[in-house]
Image (cartoon, rainbow, N blue to C red; front, side, top):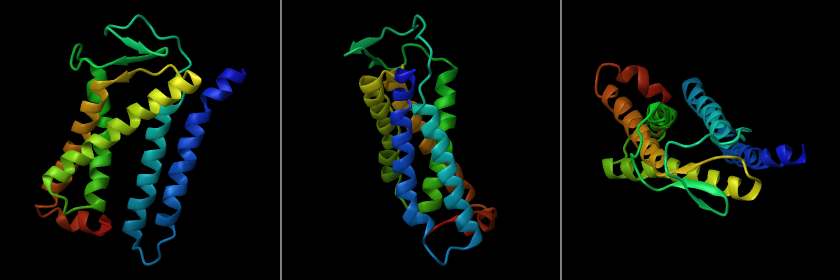
Length: 179
């Protein structure tokens, strides 16, 4: 029972870090109601993402279809695209909304900035999963495929809203932008 409680520790710490980071964003005066929707929904979205990627799965890993390597009992895969499965689409869908929020926060990023920013979620998520599994055995697999698909999700989400912002739908998007 203590082990299960310990597994939730990294998840709780991540939520506290997220809430502390948003404290200043939530306190900014002069935001329009639409901008407040952007801030609050992005916080809710990130809280769900943290739950999905750091909450302990509580299951024994099944025989993997990927050839996993181990570093101090932490399973990892550094061989991209060995096995394409529905998880690829799930990871793209997971970070697609992050691309939307990036556009709402930074609509004037160049495409190289978007591409570079796209690496951040996957690297942060996989690093956090590695650290949490190494420290308290949360039964997560660190996977290069996840970094790639998380990158694709952010870039696609940004591209979709960028494209919509260059159509008559711009009037619907503009109020939600923070800059």
